[in-house]
Image 1 (cartoon, helix red, strand yellow):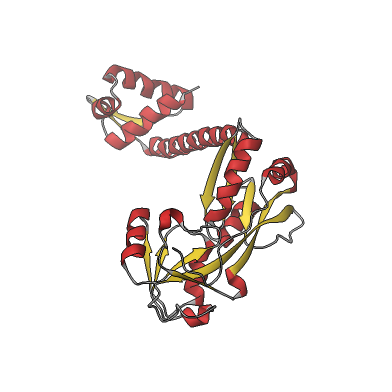
Image 2 (cartoon, helix red, strand yellow; image 1 turned 90 degrees about the vertical axis):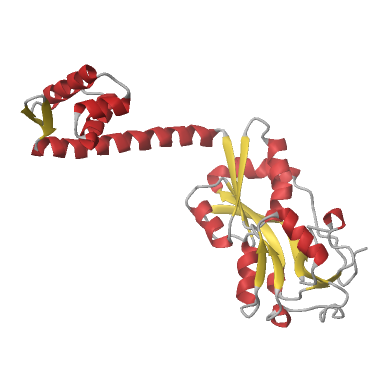
Amino acid sequence: MFTLEELEQFAAFAEAGTLSQAAEKLHISQPTITRTMQHLEECFKVPLFVRGKNRISLNETGRFAVEQAHRVLDAADSALRQVQDYDRSLRTITVSSCAPAPLWYVLPALSSAFPRMTIASSLKDSARVWEDLSSDLCRIAVLPHESRDDRFLSFPFLRERLFICVPPSHALAGKTSVTFRDLNGFNFLLKSEIGFWDGMCRKKMPASHFLVQNDEFEFNELVRSSSLPCFATDLAGNPDGLLSGRVLVPLTDLEADVTYHLACRKENRDYLTPLRERLPHSQGRTSAGRKFR
């Protein structure tokens, strides 16, 4: 029977067109690849080549055999990746989250509960988090709502409330609260990789333009130096005095007050129970309407 290495040489010959060029590409000798072609014909038990003076070429059956060789090689590569991914999954807890803040609590708790496991996380919008959970692409999901699907367990664990953060001279600074409708039309600074918050703001504020910053340093510099409003939450707080001198105004829309739920498949409950025991009963502490100093 032929080997995968021989099929790779066969495919390389088909691509190169000559034995010498295929041998050069594969860094093997021409006699070696010549013997491989002979062995493949013996294995298939049909002629694969048209032989001429000092060269061979594929016949019609040979070209068909090359197609099958590519399929076998692709299947072998796929099997290799799947086995490696499966082995990795046995030692990895994957978390798919709809927002950054829950990960600040979930990841340390998981590391504490499962010190021998690798913890991997991803940040996505709510629909894609749900897809990951439904497709078993993650062990634990963080959703902005309860799961009512009988296949899953879920529980609430964290609340996050959205604020706008504006300079004292801004038109919205004197308000005690605002809604997305009030904000629609104002331009805002926006961080990248904020999960479902990004889509929500764009949906609720279709007339607004968002200056999205991928770089943390550049975003911070714009917050300090520009008059553009930005968003803050009661969980994010005021890191490094970034929001000093700005006024916080809470949003009163229901969508701006989110209770995150942890969810997992019922067969993965052994991951959720130790995690729940280690999660702090955390609530946001930012005072609505106050000014950071």
